[in-house]
Image (cartoon, rainbow, N blue to C red; front, top):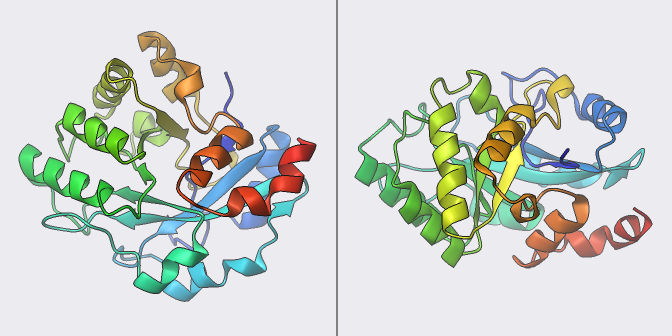
Length: 250
């Protein structure tokens, strides 16, 4: 199965990434995708864009050459007890939010502390996706996190980049995320975490792991644009309405 929506990518607005929005559109089109998401880092990361960057993304067309563009953020889970760094006034400008542990913001802590912080972030109601929870530098009680995510209609991410060395040693932990999420009858999102346009939509390693454990494909919320915008509508995000004509034409 090839996913048609990528929920996690970084452009040159994050200075450790290498592609423009238009370059992402070109690659998404070449790969037969429907939609991708711009998810630059939240403001406490050293190379994050100014908050005005997020507020001004209304200048971007919703659809370019048939490819829909979502406006999101990869926020930071904050020390020591969780929460996130999304400025209060920014929420109306976001189609959704990812929250992740990042070492420059949150120093790796104990399994109990990491779990507490992640669950507290889920419970804010401001986050729809937990980014790369398989990072071995931040051990968590996966079952407790999945239960909290299910209670709050939040999904954990299976991050393809984690299998390629971005967070060395993540593979076995990502497999456990898949297995435990399946056991607890919950949903996931798969993403590339692309930092260059050529990688957009790349889910090959994540999908191989999902196939190995037999994770049901119908419980991947970003398998296509309809499924992902339906998920966002459950969080009262208006993007599904804004894209309704485009969605009908798919």
